[in-house]
Image 1 (cartoon, helix red, strand yellow):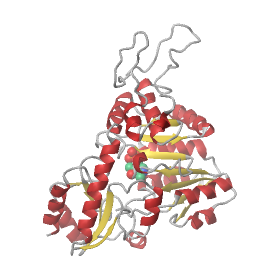
Image 2 (cartoon, helix red, strand yellow):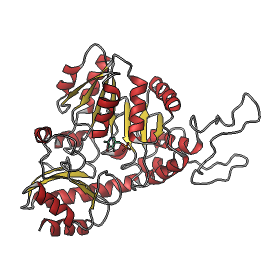
Image 3 (tube, rainbow, N blue to C red):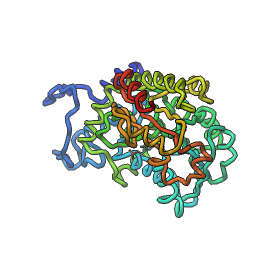
Image 4 (cartoon, rainbow, N blue to C red):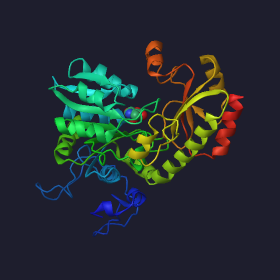
Length: 389
Ligand SMILES: *Cc1c(COP(=O)(O)O)cnc(C)c1O
């Protein structure tokens, strides 16, 4: 299956990287085996068997996943890491040097901000946070030593978008690498490499794995030079995905398209239901006409995903009562699994952000974030109805 682009998304999600092995001694498995071996024997000193030497460098099960991941983002190269943050750390170690500067969206995932600010920021590189909703702000922040621009679109929990094509024109003009965290939409709905990004990163813990049972991170690139730098650092740093977790992720990916369609269908139905509810002040979902960047979402993505946020009438205590009354929505952080999850950013994911800053960026005390699962939507709405009542 050399020319993978001739196949559709689901065909690739199922077949790429897992072609049956018909070579002598091959057994024709339609699912890649879990290769647990950490080392691989060779017959001749100078000839590693099929290129395999040691699992940190290359493992057949992880390699199958990496091949599939690359294909789904329309890139030539893919990498599987032990978590999203392991993937992000490796990107930063590969592409940024002491004394460099990076520009980042001011509404990034909290763990990414912690990594940039606390782990790297103070002694490795300098960072400017900008509101990337307006590409002009990105361009204005670029300096002589800027090496990288880091975006997330849509963001969490306010679902702000950045115009990836417009920003990629700016980064290309300045010879800067553009990294896009595509966790919230998955490659099924958004392909940043096609929009001009250089590096795509995911927490595959979320939609790619899809079942809330495996942590992982993935990186996809099309440029060979970037591939070589990241490959060198993936092996040198060593935060690779295990063979068993690679298998679980491969298993999850096969239904990615089906899941994303259902996540989105349920999310849109719930968003429209909430929009009309008297106890709801506002609903934030890129698929609603009321979202300020609905037109950009329609132009840039093939869908709007399964995460929405809404603000309810009342105080933080009212919000807590509502959340604790829910039966089907698990009160939990994270997103992207088959089960619906709900959380209160002010008290959970964003509790470390001061109240003033939260209010300034739009995270009020009663803003609720939902990762809509793939259950029967009537059951989800009935649960929201009783808890809002
Ligand atoms: C969860 C998440 C991460 C971090 O990934 P882990 O797998 O938890 O390390 C990064 N970016 C986004 C947008 C996320 O949602």
